[in-house]
Length: 333
Image (cartoon, rainbow, N blue to C red; front, top):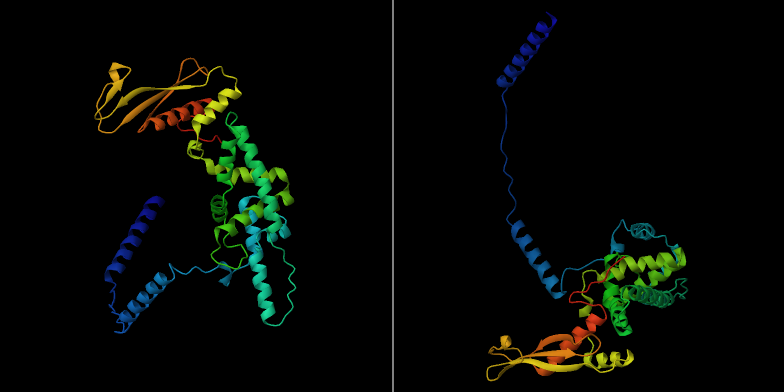
């Protein structure tokens, strides 16, 4: 009986609510807003002026973060260290991010107003020199551990690629140094980014030790070799000469001998093997290398001229001797 009464009350309440809504009158009026005639032409003119200014300046004007009201340099430095997961000494970090041009500019401003320049700030020159040495040591040690068979010339080539100004500047930009650097020019040039990143490595070494600095370089600099074919970085000028030198160093009885095994173009067709006989519009020369480093046949390559085929065949022999293959990528660990 109680359940029946509860159901009856719910139905009556629902019907009364629906009836109330149906009897309500909704008063809605539409309003149209009109703007003055001068608004649209003014907005178009302002947009045209902005586009012309961007064209004359070479793009939109970029403002430094310190021009914003909520800018807090101390908080940004604290957030920068935590974002990288490293602990920096505050004094070393500030020194690493201070370029000499900024100190010179501030001293010039003080001299213009009649004040004696007495700035307690230090530039990152000393830290950058120390950081460059540390990065070079870490990178060379890593490459020698990865590529155990390659010559020192290739190690130096990859090392110079990783320590180039463009590469270090690229790394510095992507970790957020652009908003923290104190320098005279803005946006900062690649040399400033590269110098500051080197100083940052030295600051980390002084703050957290050499092991943390080594891992920092490995995570940010060495990883730039990821998905990059190292064969494209090292191109020896005289591969045949290098091959002969290696044979002499390895005390090989006879130096490698190059032979023309296939030649084809529109007027002459010659081949050692009959199945290679064909006529082509462009000249093709197949050169092979035989020697005693490996039994009999060593390598074969194709070139548009005879010398090019011999050069590419020498490349092939060298890459197999150094355990470098057609697509050799750096193994990161």
